[in-house]
Length: 217
Image (cartoon, rainbow, N blue to C red; front, side, top):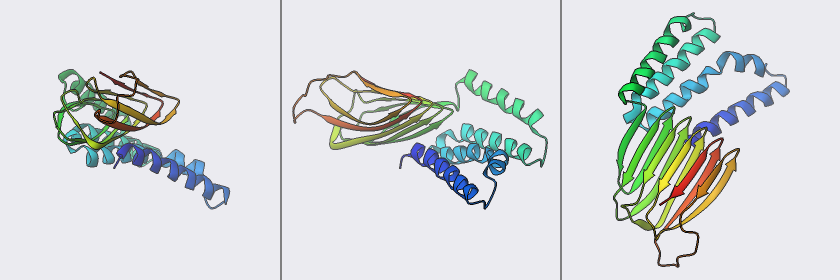
C-alpha cells in the first residue's frame, strides 16, 4: 500500500464530503475546517507510525503537535504557548544529533517507506528486487539499487508531495517511468535508448505533487 496516496486521498475525500454537505446546508464546512483541521496533522503522524514503526519518535511528535493545535482550536486548553516551542526544540535536537528525522535502512526484495517531515536512505542488494512503494510528505527518500537486480515484473510505486525522491540504478537497466506530475516533475537521466527485452527492467509509477523525483545512475 502506498501510504502517501492513502493520506492525501483521504484528506481530499474528507474535504470534498464537507463541501458537499455544506452545499446541501447540512453543516457549516468553514466552521468545521477551522476547528478540526489539526486532525490532518494527527492523521499524518498515525499513518507514519503504521507505515514506518522505526521512525515512531518523529511520528509521535507530529501527533503531539496536531493534538496541541486541536486543543487550541477547540478552546479546550491554551497549551500551545509552551508546548509548541518545546516540540520545536526537541525536533531541533533530533536534527543536530541525527536521530529520528532520517534513517538508513537496508531493503530486501521489496521496499515500503513512508516519510512525513522526515527522510530516509535505503539500499537493496537483492538479486530479485520486486519493487514496492515509497511515499514522502514534506520529506525525502533516497533508494540505491546499484547493487541489486530486478525481478521480471519489478514495479515501484512512488508518491511525493512537497518533497523529493532520488533513485539510483546501475547502468544497463531499462527504467520505464509512468505517472502524473502536478506542480512538480520527474527526471529520468538514465540511458534513454531501448536496451532490448533481455535488459533488466524496472517500472516506476509516480505521482509528484509540488515536489520532484530523479532517477539516475
